[in-house]
Amino acid sequence: SNASMRTIFASITQGFMQDFRPEFHEMSGPIVDASLEIYIDIQKELLPTPSKSHYTFNLRDLAKVIQGILMVEPKNIADADEMLLLWCHEASRVFRDRLISVGDRDWYDSKVVTVLSSHFSRTWQASQFVDVLFSDFMAQPKPTPYVQVTDMEKANKVLKEYAEDYTLNLNKPMDLVFFKDAIGHISRIARLLRQPRGNALLVGVGGSGRQSLTRLASYMAEMKCFQIELTRGYGVNEFHEDLKRLLMQAGAENKPTVFLFSDTQIIKESFLEDINNILNAGEVPDLFAADELSKIIELVRPLAKAAGKIETKDIIFSHFIQLCRENLHVVLAFSPVGESFRNRLRMFPSLVNCCTIDWFTEWPQD
Image (cartoon, rainbow, N blue to C red; front, side, top):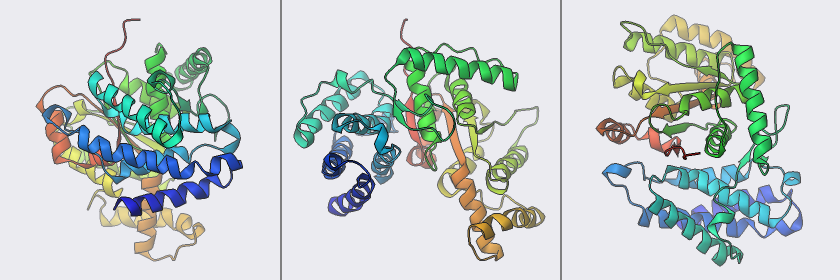
């Protein structure tokens, strides 16, 4: 029920705000109420249609807004207005980024204006919060703070330096132009990579920069970016071998990993069933043979022991799954053109439920 949702999220937010200055303490209730109002109203107003089949919202979306707010440190939020800008940013990342038409975005923006007025007594215009950006790539070294990006010139310079580093260290060209939209998209991807179990569904046509920006965001977050390579005769068995390597890297070797997968790599639809399982449960049923399982148990045993867990096979394997879920970020690059996108979202609901959607609209003329 709405009352129990409010109670849960309000207690989380209140606990978090205890470390902030006293003027922030009374904001926790209104932040939860405002998020709840948008969550309830967007489900009534923006209904899924054949061309908007991803307009399905669930409790995870509401949790993602609150989770985003929990990423800041008290010293990096100057005043109540900046906290409100952070809330606008997090709500927009969860709800606004998936909207595909100007009309839907305008409805969302006016809803936020109304909510800011009714819950926070602020008479803001949409222009004051639509382009607000929070990210963690502006400082070094890791872990870097999650802060508002106010200087776009500096952001452009920092990203260019990362792209040059990427080219030098990995010997792969990264020739990107960091205009406003590109900076926005790479910030969105970076935001999900710093969140536990943050996965992304990037929707746009080929050449819109989804894969390049993901590779660079992975490099910036010091994560390995894993992609499958299609060869002649690549099929289900080869895909399963690649998934084993991926899960071993994330779970047994305990390495933060990004799995970048494009819809052009879907040779068989069963590939998506496996990805759906990874998103939902962190594993693919019956993927590993008995000898591979014993190797996993051997590798994960010291990690499970360090976490204070009982060393039985089942508990060690469940620790392996937990590490997979915590270390692995799935980034899907799909095109919205044609029937297949719609059908896939319908058949594999975790593609929407377990991912934050970022819809790449056409690049501006400049």
